[in-house]
Each structure stands twice: as C-alpha cells, then as structure tokens.
Image (cartoon, rainbow, N blue to C red; front, side):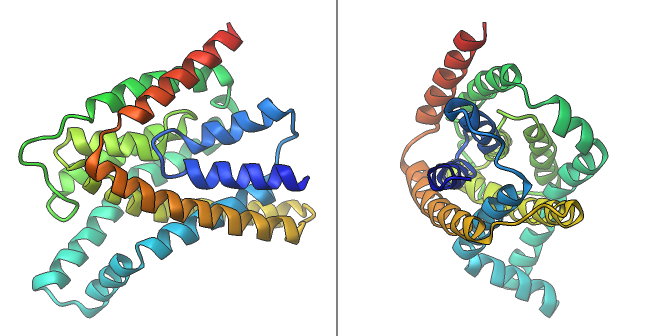
Length: 265
C-alpha cells in the first residue's frame, strides 16, 4: 500500500466508525473512487484496533466503574448502576454476536455491492430523520431496561448490511425507544466495544491462518491515524449532538445515496 492510501483509509475508518454514516460503506467505496486494490485483511485489522483504542480511551472512566462494580459485587448506589449498565451492554451485544457468527459467510460475500449500499444509505438515512424527535421523558443509558437494550441490540443486527451504519441504526432505535440523543450515542459507542474487539480477534485469527505478509510500518501508521481521528470524532460528535439534531448526517446520507444511484443506474 502507498502512504497516501494508508493515510486516507485510516482517516476514513476513524472518522466514519462512530458517525451515523456507515464506516463499512465508506471503506468499500473509497478504493473504488481512487482505483485502489483492496486494502487487505491486515490493514482492516489495524484500523479497527485503532478505533477500539479510541473508544476505550474515551470511555475509560465509565469502563473502569463498570468493571469495579462487576468485580466488587456491591449492590448499592453507583456500583449497582454501573453493574446494571454492564448487563445492558451484554444484552444489547448478544443479537449481533449470534447473527454474525451464524451468517458471517453470507454477509461477507453477498451484501457488499454498491447498489445495496446506495439503497441502505438512503433508507436508513430517512429512518435516522425520525430520531430527531425525542420523547418528553427521555431516558439516559442508566435508565433503560433490559427489553429496551435488547431492542437496540436487535436493531444493531441490521448493521451487517453495508450502508446501514452500526452507530446510526443503534442511535435511531435508542431514540425511538425513549432515550436522549446524546445518551443514545454514548450507549451506541459502549455497544461498539465488544463487537470491535470480537471482530478484531476473529480477523486476527484469519490473518494468522492465511500467512499473509505483514507490513508492520503501514499497520502501525494505520492504527495511530485511525485512533486519533476516531477519538476526535467521538469527542466532537457527543458535544454536537447535545445541541443539534441528526439532520446534517441525514442530508449527507441522502446526497451520498443519490450520487451512487446516479452513477449505478
């Protein structure tokens, strides 16, 4: 891979992973736009490691409290609240783990066409528009129940379709089910941690089995750039969504989908 390709793909992954615009769609489309060959499994692992570092670093305080609450076994106050949030994240993660494990081969081979990306980009963009309206008694991530967490987790399964956006569909579902927009974003980001970690481990095993040559310099640069850009994106997005709506991201999705349809039709 050339340095320009490494830089652009790393920044694309870091910026789009946590925005409601689909990182998988952008990683599929970017090589098509520039005429590059597929970036390969090793680089895919690297940039996902970068985004994992970013989200774990950003939420290190919450993750520490959740871990302590689970290990200590205390049942009162903040310990109970943090242990409960851990359980909600686990429940919200299970549907994607099950579906991804059973249908991984189908997802990897049949759902990566530009036409599917165009349709899902527009369709789920319009659905995201509905999430601009919050409930009057909206909840934060500590105030939801297991049923609501499972509903968000079931919605997350749709993110296996490129163009859907994992963060976008989970935020949409969370707000429609009664959460604040910024709380929905935080819960969505917490849900990403076990999935990115699990996906990274799985791809690392595949990489080891394939005996593919590893360009360590390229991978290290990819990790650093994706981590920095992803951290900055999380920081900015959580502050943006406290004051504004999802409308700019809806508009971007509609324009991107429309451009793809014009090119493909």
